[in-house]
Amino acid sequence: MARLLVVHHTPSPALDSLHRAVLDGAGADGLEDVEVVSRPALLAGATDALEADGYIVGAPANLGSMAGALKHFFDLAYYPCLEATVGRPYGVYLHGNDDLGGAQRDLERIVTGLRWREAHAAVHVTGAPSADDLAAAWDLGATVAANLLDP
Image (cartoon, rainbow, N blue to C red):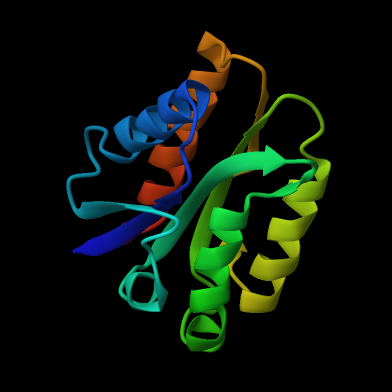
């Protein structure tokens, strides 16, 4: 069975709703052969990442940068995963009150170094998530999970 690791930092109701939508999408009908493991960013580590076949990371953008909790996860996982996880699919969702560009750039630098493969365009949400934002988060979860199934 394939494993999807969802690493999240959800300190707000907006991020909680996005996280739940991602999990709902990843658990959609037809994706029963994908085990979805959700870990808070401050508790996730290299073993979680090495045991996964694909990834979704979600966090707030704080002061224009990636949240420190998510950075902590990557600090723990980066070197152990550097060669072992090349080519694995990933997706990202970010939330903030304004510009998310700095946080996206931070994440792109890390996943470029890890040589992960983007399976879905990043979901960026500013302010309260709309129905369309939640649908995009659901699609993110479903798409990355579907990438883990044998063709």
